[in-house]
Length: 80
Image 1 (cartoon, rainbow, N blue to C red):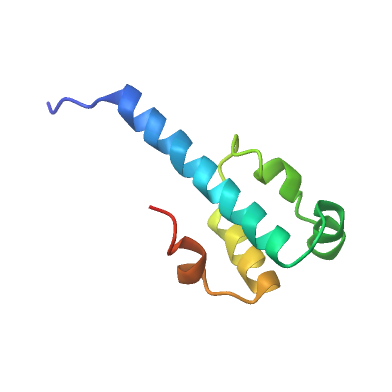
Image 2 (cartoon, rainbow, N blue to C red):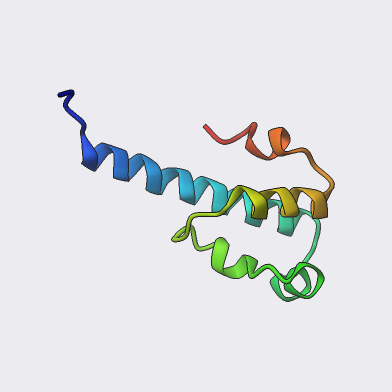
């Protein structure tokens, strides 16, 4: 059985969640949209997602990208 470094896996997973959260916030702020306005327009609680504590579903990211008129690949291109 292969050795799996679960501490590293958990840390990289948390880092990824934070990077996605920062990208969500960056897009929203760049478009001058408040969290409340975004929620009213989409029924997505972006304030919760921007904390980086939750997994963001691909369906939610797809809706966010549609709202901000960007592709999913553009959303992820700066996330490493």
